[in-house]
Figure 1: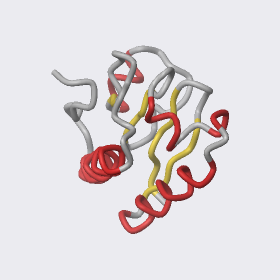
Figure 2 (figure 1 turned 135 degrees about the vertical axis):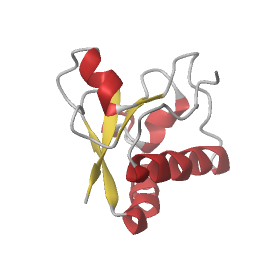
Figure 3 (figure 1 turned 45 degrees about the horizontal axis):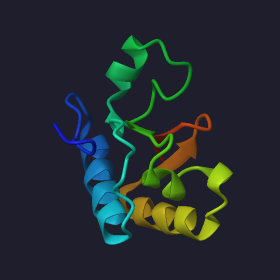
Figure 4 (figure 1 turned 30 degrees about the vertical axis):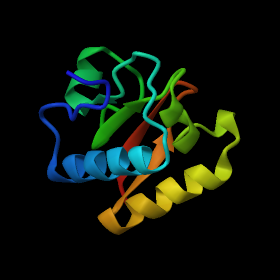
Length: 108
């Protein structure tokens, strides 16, 4: 299993978002995860009893890793976040930061 592997039990939109996000991260050199698993299904997230993201299409953990540059406003890389949002928009989904360490993908 790689740190960027697609989780099981994703919706079709979740799968599309995962593929687009991984391609974006690879294109922009943002694949270092700090050794943490990056993607979770909403079902897995709910089983962890997390507060936010359980009704999403995909959860992205970006604490301490490069993917945070494309999702976390705490990093202040607003251009990269904007580019990620532009990547997701044609798929009919968007990213929302849930906490400082993870974000979720929702239907637009």
